[in-house]
Length: 252
Image (tube, rainbow, N blue to C red; front, side):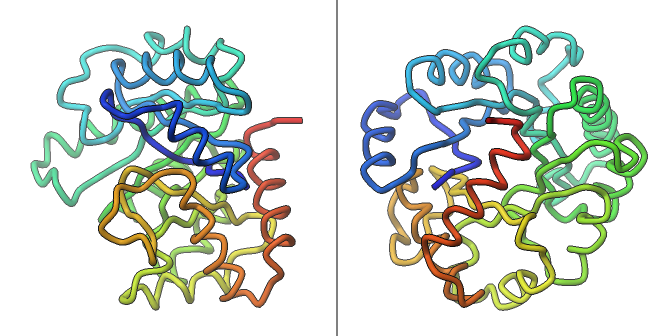
């Protein structure tokens, strides 16, 4: 399996989390950087473990503290273990201030342009901002660069727009949640070659691990639920989602 999106906090035991993942059948994983500090940790951690990759960007909720330029991240993107630009995007759930939202859009589009320039996929966060997110993607990438809409939370009505723009749709433990019927229904609209799985750990632990601190090993429960919903064999879905991840991240 390939956990395409997980986070580590400074206090986390990366070696233990990695061993748990490999024991659970998770062979590949992408560690996400959300600001310069977490990107530093990500580049250093990924260097220590086989088949661990990393991304680098500025999460929308951290744009208030970011006064730099996308060029400040170039040394991350040149690293052999870097596979993506992100986590970037828009989050209008927490940030209601119009000036902050405009700054989110400015920085998001700057990183999208960097993604297109480098021909590396963007890993995109979107919360209560689907129209604006899709508009930014279309304005910058123009359908010429793949991207990942991570931890998808929308319904079937939004899927086609993101797919048409060049997106892969990544599902997290939310797909196992009791009140996620509309999210589960969206799976019917996503081509099999555009589905990814992730944990977004340490958040959003899937059923039956609710209440525990999430970790990449638990992506097995995301896979199992999607396989059930699509009436697919577990090994078939494992192979499919891993191939999809390798394709979008340009891994041989």
